[in-house]
Length: 136
Image (spheres, rainbow, N blue to C red):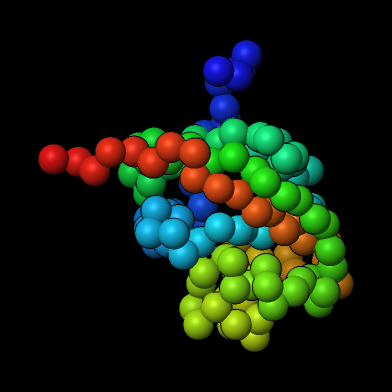
């Protein structure tokens, strides 16, 4: 067990985002995520991911649903995110074009730093260490 309890957080910016992206994680489709590097400078932000970091992932209602372990982290400009990373994120049709459209819209709508084509993006890979049991 880690000395300190893992941070708890949800994917996205709304309960709907959290539930939809969590479903992709739990069914094995999603094994990566991306964040704006600038958002880590915001008050109350999660810690910058590092390999081995454990996180408790919450659903849209704030209930813990899984524990993830970070397996890789790269910081690259938005316009250099790879098709492989886009596919691992599991969203839309899993193409790089869809990834770019989805993430540009997300950061324009929800990031305090906004969006720029060369903005630094934290590309994180993870594995599910412990999924929650399905509710009976």
